[in-house]
Length: 269
Image (tube, rainbow, N blue to C red):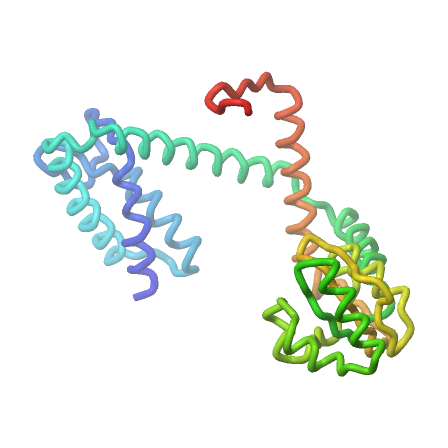
């Protein structure tokens, strides 16, 4: 059943632009128009790759039947002139561009794989960034420096940090937990937050508000403990994806640097 659903989803490929020509390998015809063998084979190959199941004659028949139905709708759409509508033409052009770009990017990734040496180097960098210590902390997030300083003044007078966080923090993820962020590595936090946190001693609160793109923070260090980085085998796939994305981004930036790009459709203010 899963395989058939996959076939039906992929069969929408038949909605791409049709170029009719004499086709000796047509597996069916609809009002004289062919259902091409190449279409069916492509859909079956793609479905096999997605589902892991081997195609059989029943599945082939299901694909042909789906393509026959879509061909009937396709012909009616042409009769109605839908393929000439401006929005359809734009959508068709963008869909073709997207298919071509995705195929190009997939080809780039295939031809520029991340090596084992690069993954190992990436792992060492990952461990370095992760550090050897993790932190337990609370914070209160507010909009302005003035609000943050007022809260720090209350804390100095003995106010309860957790109660103030529940009453005043804007962070929905920690507000109801009294500002508790749990255990984490500073590498996972924005730099101003991480830099301020790592200067604190256990039990201390930042003496001045800490600004980030989210607002102004008051941070309290609850505790620290040693951190053991995950084993290489557990994170290597994620490292590979990250490095591959970086390669792709670097390549795209190089194309942009070499290109002559003129944007004329936006008025300069």
